[in-house]
Image (cartoon, rainbow, N blue to C red; front, side, top):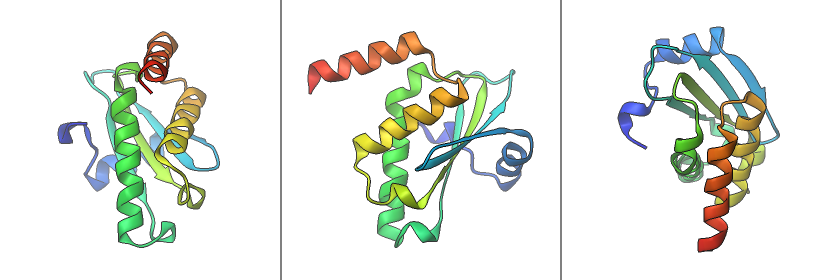
Length: 127
């Protein structure tokens, strides 16, 4: 995922928190903030200190970024997305994190299911 597709500014995070809609499961909280003029979705990540030491938090962020990258063709382009990791995500593998990401994105209705089915179908063939 390109760095230009990341949310970095505090003001942009706050706008998504205040005006966006939240969805959650046991591992993740997802905020979706619609931006109709946007050409590509943007993602902000937050992994708190309760999730472990710096090495573990960075691993969780890598898992989340990779999961979003693999799902990027199925994600609606007109949204800002904030992903907040809960403590339950600590002991999960990449594939479990990705499944959790898919679940919460389906709840938020930001995934194109036809694209998603082709992505998931293609992964099982290569594994």
